[in-house]
Each structure stands twice: as structure tokens, then as C-alpha cells.
Length: 479
Image (cartoon, rainbow, N blue to C red; front, side, top):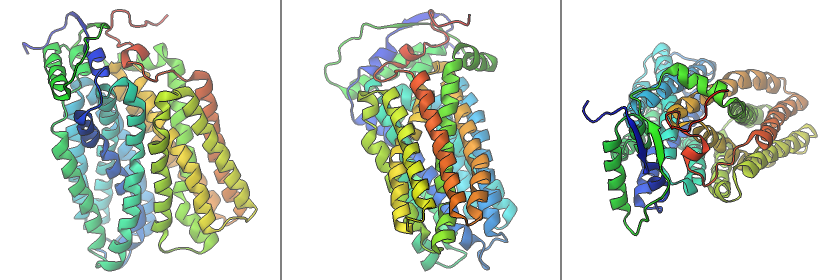
């Protein structure tokens, strides 16, 4: 292609993007890219709350509730992990826009096909493919958002966007109540999946207007296209925009090899790799100590086996309010103080909840209130894990880094967590469930301590200053 070069260039594109004032254009980015987490929250919650209806005679599927909660959930997790890794690699290689369009299409088609399920194997197949698309979304979307949002807003926007998962979870929990009670057994669950498709189509219409990341373009030899996109953004934003002084010099490449990407994480940034793993595994264990078995806990200890969606909606609201209200502090107070405080603080709060539960001092309402407080703090921390791994590695590895840590965290939370915590809750002994809470809390606290020692001061700094691109002339090299 004539517009693709492989020379050495100096560019002010990163600095020009970072100095932009907040505008309606940035809101378009947030809506077009960020709202997909609402879809994920809606998807996961709907399936969890529909498991009983899917297993009822006349649902149109020969499937048990255990298969929905077990096999289908495991396949969704497996799909999300593999999709993140596969599409993450493609995102770094072929660009952000191609992949965030493709992954959303995969999600839409798979969800639509799930709504038309006629057999258990069909349902399982498209649960896997739905997860495959959602996993790819995490890699493609987080990398694109961080590269398009000005550095002084990046922390709060990323955290709020990732926290919006719980807005979808609250909506999914409330939606399932009328769908379960007011529609025929073979229709309600299909309508629930159909709602996800409608929302996804609306997001796709907005997403078409989101440009490719100029940062990705100039590194991959398409500096002319990158200049045109940034110039168009500046015209849309308007106002008096001073010319930045800082420039970045890169050796352009058409592609970056996978071995180079893997080598970067292990050899150049080993401490940051340990940090990313700690943050993802910590939040995965805390969340699964609570959310995986919340309905089982309510049924086992408080004899509440209907309308659990209302309780989950309350928990989900607490989860969303945390990133919304605490998110700005990650840009002002700073990453290390806020990440460590939310991880350690939520862990300590969960330990207190475990003690109260073991003493028999809680009711279903007060336990839900405790969970909401814990997750108000924890949700901001969990969202900051995605922010951290998307900004502390070089641009060429960004999507793959997000995919790698997402896959590890999701596998730890979606496989190890449920196996461990469900067995403890199933005994019906309050002390065992309290132990499940304590395990999740201690792993979360440990991750917060790792942040204190290995955290990176990334607030209000350009991505290239936090981790120079591998193609930058003065990029760090292994010893």
C-alpha cells in the first residue's frame, strides 16, 4: 500500500490528543465503545437469573438448571478467555477499529442464535461464542479508549466505563422478574436475549463513527491517515488549541511479532507483569466469594429462593456507584494510593462481613447491605485493574496485555473461585461460608499490598511517558 511507510518519524500526535479539552466527540467515544460493558453485565445476569426457567418443562430446551449454571457458565468463561487472547493479538496486529467492530458483530450474532436455541448443544455452542465476542471486546475496547481519551481524564473514564458492567447487571436482574412471571415459559428467556441484541445494534450504529487509534496508525506506518484523523478531531473539538512541544520519534513497522510482545512483558516489565496478575486475581477471588454464590447463600441461610434478582440489583447498584463516585480520585489523588486503598479497604470490609456472618448477626437485608458497601469500594479497585494493565505496557502490546490479564483473572475467578466457594457454601455451615468470604478478602488485600510496592504513577501522564512504544528510538531495552 502506498500510504504505509516503515521509516523513522517524529510525531506530536500523542501530545495533541492528550491536550484536547473534553468535548461531545469524547462522549461519542464513551457511548460507542464504553457501553458494551452494560451488555456484558446484562448478559451474565440474565443467564444466571433465567436458569430455573430454562430448566422448566415447556421452555423449548431439554436442559437442567445445573447445566445452565455449570456447563453453560464454564463455556462462556472459556469463550471469554480464548476470545480475549485471540482478538487481543489481532487488535495489536490489525488495528483497534477493525476488531471492535468484528467483536461486537460476533457477540450480536451469537446472542441472537442463543435466543433461537432448540437444543442444549446449540445453547452451549452459542454461549461459548457469545463469551468469545465479549472477551475480544475487553481487549479491543480498553486499548482504543485509553489511546483516544486525554491523559488527565483517562483514569476516571476508564474506571467508570468498566464499572458500567454493573449498570447492565442491575438492569438484567430487574428485567428477569417480569420476563419470568408475565411471559410464557418458552418466550420469556428468548425475549431476554433479544433485548441484548437490540442494545448491541444501537451501540454498533454509534461505533461506526469511532475512528482508528491514531497512535496505532503512526506506529504501523500510516502516519498520513493518523494526521488526518487527529486534524478532524481538532476541528470538531474547536477552540484555541496550543501547539504542544513534546514529540515522539518511532521506527515504523507494519507488524510486531508475537514473540516480541511476549518478551516485552516478561523481560522488560517483569514487575508490572506481577502487578497485573496480582490485581486481576485479587479482584476475581473477592468477587466470586460474593457474587457467584449470593443466591445460594440467600436460599441456604435465609430461605429466600424467589425474587433474588431484587437483592442482586441492590448489590449491582453499589458496584456501579463505586467507580462513578470514586473514579475521579484516581486522576487527582493518584493511582497507587487509590488502587491500594480500594483493594485493601474492600478486603478489610469483607473480613468484617465474614465475622458478622459467622456470629449469626446478619439477616438477608443486612448481609446485602454489607455486600453493597464492600463492592462499592471493590468495584472501583477492580475497574482500576483494567486501567492499570492498559496503560503500563507499550502501545504495541496493549491489547494483548489486557487480553492476557483478563484471561488469567477470568479463569481464576470463573473456574477456581466457583469450585472453591460453592463447596464451602454448600455445607450449610455459617463458618464455612465465612471462610469463603475470608479467602476472597485476604487475596484482595494481598493484591493491594503488591500495588503499594510495585504500583506505577500513571495519573495525568501520557501513555508514551508511562511505557515508551517498542518502536520508539529511546525505548527501554532488556539488560
